[in-house]
Length: 219
Image 1: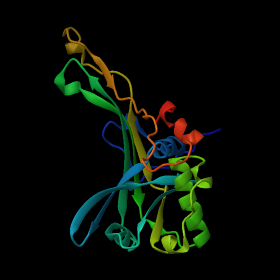
Image 2: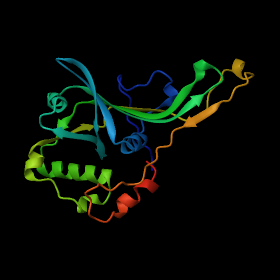
Image 3: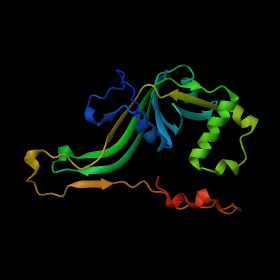
Image 4: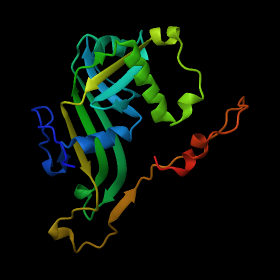
């Protein structure tokens, strides 16, 4: 399958260490799908803000949700320009010089405006997709949202039309003049593991397969 790349815009074109950048949609989707949280930067009459919130992807859009009374969601409904970021830290890279120490990471930035998911069917499908992302298979076990709960919830989405990815992996890149310096070099990786599921004190049900498998799967 041929990879599809989005042409960079003036806002998404990576200029610093541009060789680490990518505009491939498949890479962008993988970074977003591996995340449960994003940070949304926006501006209102009180200044600049950057707020973390749950996120999930469906096709070519990134979704968020919250209470109808949320200050951030109210502002986003005013066609506010935003920057959404997701970052995974994979390791610390130790070089021969202090200057060349760095980090291995995968990051994505999305620019644009959020739009409200007004269609009731699409709203329900989006919230079902969030539940499926959190714990595949659990949707069939829990009580679904009530009309009152859905009426109190706003679901927004942003198109993945103006995005950029920047990522680094591998060991240090030392200057030739530092190669004779005797010091340990390499990577201190972060492993994104999962712990064993912990039953609630008031739980009375057998642990389902998706919960039992949680601790054996990689994050």
